[in-house]
Length: 385
Ligand code: AOF
Ligand code: ZN
Image (cartoon, rainbow, N blue to C red; front, top):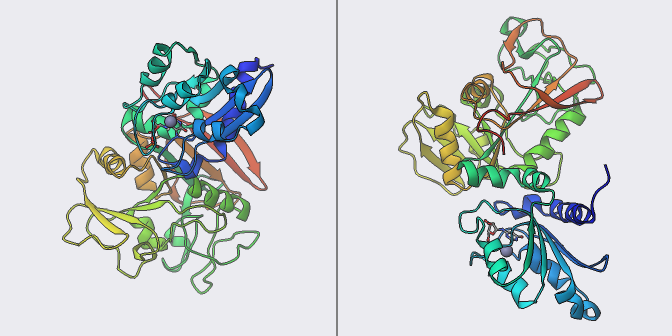
């Protein structure tokens, strides 16, 4: 489908914004493009958190020789320009000061400090303001930010890997003891993957992987894109995962660990101080230490909501939940999830822990060598962004 010129420049805004998405969090990443008579004279995107907004970087990028064109140019911006003093001054004031007359906006900012005030301020200053060009794409792009502000909760991504016959892990009966590793990327194993994963006995310490190394690398990329990663107690006790970003470059998400009765031993990887971690317990008398924090929550029938409230309180706009079965199923049953990313490997377990059960339509699937990746979105009632 051919794009209108407005859509074309808005698309460029999103391309620019993609460059700054993770670093800008928990701010939205916003792209801005300044166009004069079909020529882009300036462009920019939001700087890392706390830094200048997209509009500022766009205006600063205009060359000396083009500066006189600014008032006659059209500004495209993927999110409503801000109207408030946050860590930076209002972008609206900058636009007004630069005497830009035409502003094309992708979508309204859901932040209650802005929420239409930016558009109003520009209109009151006599500007021509158009709102809603590629609005859906602009919201989708910053979906973590939108979910956070509109639903007061993080964007929730479920991730698991299952065998070709639908198990997360093989039956214990197939294993000599529980020290054998298997499964996928929630593990802390750096051992090279054999090409054909087979169930290993305990005299062989090699883990059993469901997914191949390309799929596992993708999971590390995903971790680097989210603000938090969460697993249940059993997953930690079984696998001693580090929950960090290894085979990809990018920041580590904050580790969120369910530990209702404080069972996780001090020497486990999730308790090292290398990465900020939050332990969710029923009760604790443990002090917050360095990067290791504790939060008390009720482990009742509202557990997923209670967890989501803690993440919200800590300004964590997204979380990838990597297991185990019970934790994943609890979020599914509460209908508190936005995306599920499911790998189906080629290994067959015949028996074991069944994969979570849920009803949702896949929006995408692809093959990664012998693995299949299926992505689901939860557009359930009241749950669409
Ligand atoms: C824009 N352009 O590029 C971004 C905006 O504390 P501050 O000053 O960084 O403001 C953060 C808020 O500003 C953020 O929550 C969102 O409402 C808006 N972000 N606005 O005009 C931008 N990143
Ligand atoms: Zn701004």
